[in-house]
Amino acid sequence: DDGDDDDDDDDDDDDQHAADENHNHGDDAEDDEEEVGEVDDAVADADANEIHPDGEDPEAGEPFGEAEGAPHLQLQLASTTSNGRPNLNIESYFLNLGKKSVNIQPHGSFKFVLMHAKDYTGAGVYLVHSCSYKNKKCTHGEAARIARGPLVSHGLEALTLGGGRITRHHLRKSQKAGLISIFGYSRSMGRCADCNKKACDFIAKAYPDYVVRWSNAGYLESDEYHIKDWVKCSA
Image 1 (cartoon, rainbow, N blue to C red):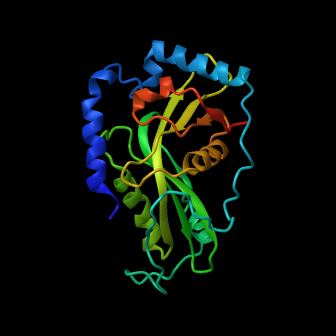
Image 2: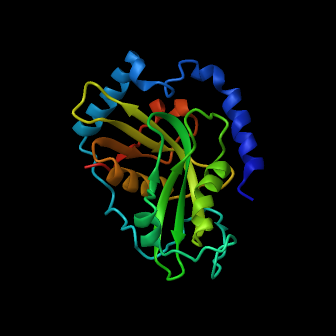
């Protein structure tokens, strides 16, 4: 159970607040001059305030640690997969198959999940996987299922830790390529105290040309512009 029933409440809540989001600033950041100016100001403010990363970036192969407050949606390992494929180790999965540990949309606002995958040796890696920005009804449970599919088909164990929302903006008035904001939570999976921070660390590594920041506040796409306690995790 990936929490689809609870995520239906998310959709209803999003619809209820749709009138507050008529500007729909996440669908096409490059074509919205007013939004670009606001985001540029946010980047300038972040740089001026010299917000520094909170701790070191977690290493991809670090021992698995549980996230506080998030129910665990776990799949068990088998010696071979259901389709007869042998189990792959983490290194083979990412290097040989060309998989990425961070998969987010090119622009817009979308839900994401933070997962931890490990192989039969116990080696593990964190993954950030998002819904499509075009699918406003995509749930955190759907994002988790899509991410788990190829992992399980190659014999890896997948654990969903939690989720939230990402908004990605492209900038034209900054030395940085854009701004990525990670905030909110998954109502179906519960609050995960460190999921947004961890996702921020991994996304900052994958997108060094972006200003990347996180907060546990907010929920809706429009909440991004009202959050005051941003923490920057990019260099």
